[in-house]
Each structure stands twice: as structure tokens, then as C-alpha cells.
Figure 1 (cartoon, rainbow, N blue to C red):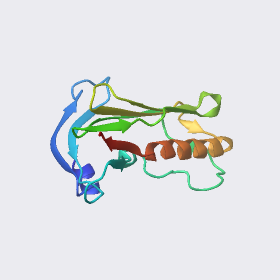
Figure 2: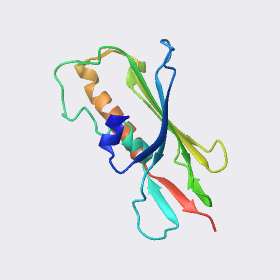
Figure 3: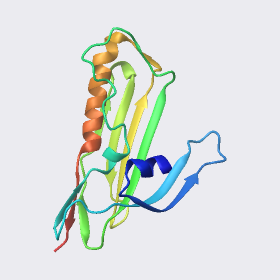
Figure 4: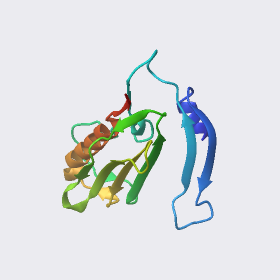
Length: 164
């Protein structure tokens, strides 16, 4: 939590808990309440936020146009981010469209979903799976584009509108 707080000094974390601490076969879960000051001043009928952009990779780790050597992650991986947002009273959200992006030869997959499980809430899920620990130099261009598309989807704005 201290790392997240230091990266975002204007955010407040009134409450947080760790889940699955004693479960070695399950991933550690961090659940917390977050308050962030509005980025717009005055009254507005629409808010634009990109909540997943603050929690994901942030930038494409594959910045070079070409690569001579394999990309070695050491192990396959699964990164899941699920955010549940509670909207202010009187507001509704325009949900972003879902997306699925796949690497060739079943090398990995990115899935983005947005839903409203209950009135006044929005749930965003980002699931990035890399099925291989090592990607050959010939797969680099696909891996780079895969990350570019996934990061672009995470950066999409969620539009929150005040009802009439």
C-alpha cells in the first residue's frame, strides 16, 4: 500500500484489507477503498476517468522496433485487475466496449470487460495472460503490438454522466 500511496500522493485510502493471505494456492488479493480528488473544477455534467491506467503496466516494456534475442519472462503469467467503482448519487456510466486481444499460436491473451453488477456501480476487469515463459525474437513484433493494444484499452476513458 505504501508504494501505491507514494505513486499517487493525492489519493486517500480510508480502508484496505489483504485477502487470501493464508491460501498458498491462490493469488494474494488487495481490497481497498480509494478517494481521488476530481480533476475538473466547478460543476460538470460529465466526468472522464481512466482508472485502469493507474493500476496496470503504464508503458509498453517493448519500446524497441526490433529485437535480436528472445524475451524471457521466466514463467508464464496471469495478471488480473478488477476494479469496482461506486458512482456518486445521480450519476450513471457509459460502459466501454469489451475487448479480446490474442497473441498468435496461443501465446497469450488480453481480455477487458466492463459491467454494472448493481445500480450505481461499475466493474472493470483487465486480464492479461502470457502462456509462454519465453518468446522468440521472431515473436517480438507481435508481443510489442499486443502490449500496445492492451495498454490502449486500459487507458480508455470511462464516461460518467450526471442524470437529469
